[in-house]
Image (tube, rainbow, N blue to C red):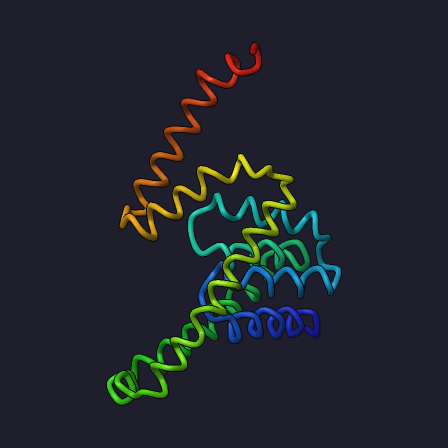
Length: 182
């Protein structure tokens, strides 16, 4: 029972104190999991890459994987609930009282102040993943262009994902072998 409480507390703490969603949770999840020696840094990075390819919120997917690795199905359920519950309660409270404070100057300033921190929390796992994968600067050109198209060009991320899928298929089926011969 104590192991389940430790898992619940760990992932509830992550869910409660992470503003900015899934990507912002990654540094906190990594620090907690690696520090407690539940996974090595390399195993965490592999799991991070795997969970990005799965549907759903990857912070929850990561918590499910960790819970399953440690305590099988019950552990995965505990971790998933612990990750989701704080956000659910916070959003519920905000929804209940939103009309009362949406135009409050202090609240507006708080959220404007949080934005740069959220950007940093999202940028950190991207840089960490790029280093772990030993990517070269040239390999970051297309993701950079994609980010600029979404941010400044107003292009829907759906089109970027579809273009990435098409590019991956073209590379795998036609270009990969041709480039090896060069």
